[in-house]
Amino acid sequence: MPKHAVEANFDGLVGPTHNYAGLSWGNVASKSNVRSVSNPREAALQGLAKMKRLADRGFVQGVLPPHERPHIPTLRAVGFSGSDSDVLRAAADHSPSILAAASSASAMWTANAATVSPSADTADHRVHFTPANLNAKFHRSIEHVVTGRALKSIFADESRFAHHPALPSVSQFGDEGAANHTRLCGGYGDPGVELFVYGQIAFNEQAPAPRIYPARQTLEASQAIARLHGLKDSRVVYAQQNPEAIDAGVFHNDVIAVGNGNTLFYHELAFLEEERVLADIRSRLTGAELEAVRVSSSQVPLEDAVASYLFNSQLLNTPDGMMLAVPGECREIASVSRYLDELVEDAGSITSVEVFDVKQSMRNGGGPACLRLRVVLNDDELKAMHQGVLLTDALYERLTTWVEAHYREELSQDDLGDPMLLDEVRKALDELTGILGLGSIYDFQL
Image (cartoon, rainbow, N blue to C red; front, side):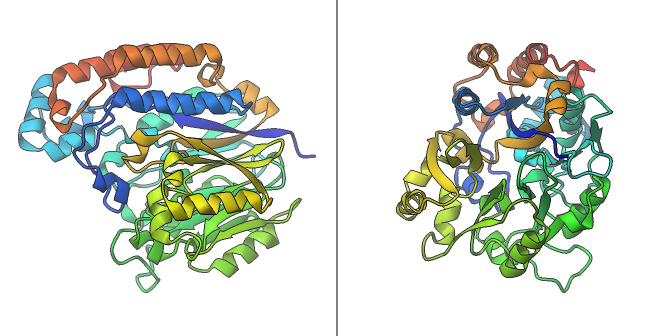
C-alpha cells in the first residue's frame, strides 16, 4: 500500500561570491548582464525570503549550502601555484576568465544539483540521488563533489537513501540534473512516471540537435540515471527537447516546462514529439489522469517565455488547487501577465499565481524553479534525514543574521582576486556548516 509522502524543496542558499560573469553560453539572461555589479547580500536575502514564505505556507522547505568560492583547488589543478593569495593574484592577472569560473556562485541553482528518484519508484525502495556532472560548463563541472558530500550528510541513513557518483564527465554523458527531469504522479507516495528530457542523442550524429547553442543533456545520461536508480521501463518516459527552443535560449527543460502531481505545464515548443510524449505519460500514469496545460506561441511567444521565465516557476500543491510561484518578471511582460490572469480564470488545475522577487538570481539566468531541488520523502524518510537543514523560524532568523554579517553588498569581477574575499568566504562557510550541522564538507575543512 502506498505510504504518505511529501515533496520537500531544498533551495540553494546564494553564495557570498554571487556575481555576473556571464559564464553560461546559451543562457540569454546570464549573458545579457555580464560584468554588472552584483549584490550578494540582497541575492541571499531574496532567496531566504522565498524559502520562508513557502515554509510559512506549510511546505517542507530545506536549505542546501553554497560552495567554497573562489575554489583554490580548481585553480591549482590548472597550474597556478604558491600560497592561496599567490594563486588568486596570478589567476586575476593572467586568466581572469578562469578565476571567474572558479568563483561562480552557480551552485545556488540546486535544480541542477542532482537527479532524485523517490522510494516509491525504485527497485530497492530507497531514495536515490545522483549529483549532476554539469560538464557542459567548466564553472559548474566542479560542483558535484561538494554537492555529493552535502547530500550524503543530509541523507545519511543508508537503509533509506542511496547515493551514486556523478556520471562520467564527458560530453556523451552530459547531465544537468533535475532541471531536465520531473516526476508526475497521482499522490507523492504512489509510484510515479519519471520524465527525462534530453537535448541530443550523443551516439547518433544523424539525430535532431540544436544548431546555435549546445544541448547540455544527452539521452545516454538520462538512461544511465534510470538504470542506476533502478527504475522500471514502464515508469519512465524519455522526451527530446525541441532544438528550436534550445536555440532560442531554453538551455534546460525547466525553462519551458514544469510538472507537479498529475499536471504538466508546458509551452507548445517544449518537446520535439509533443503528442508522443503526452501519450507515453498517459499510458504509464496510474491513479490519476494527466492534466496537460499547454501554452501556445500565440498566447505567449517563445521569446517572452524565455525573458519572463514563466515556466521556471514552482508548481505547488495547496488545499485549493495548485499554485504557480512565478518570478516578478512575469508581471512585467504583457503577454505573460495577461496569460497568467486567463490561466486562473479558467479554473483548471492551476488555481492561483503568486509572485516572488528573485531579481538577483534572475539577472544571472535562474528563476524560482532553478533555486530548488525537489525530494519526495515518505514520513519515515522525512524523520530519518538530517533535520538541521529544514527551515524553521529560528533557522531563518539565524541565517538572515549570518548573511548580514558575512556578505558584501557589492561585488564586481575585479573583486574576485582579493585574498580578503576568500578569507571572508571561508570564515562564513565554516560558521554555516556549524549552523546547519553538516560537518566538514568543504575542501578547506578536510
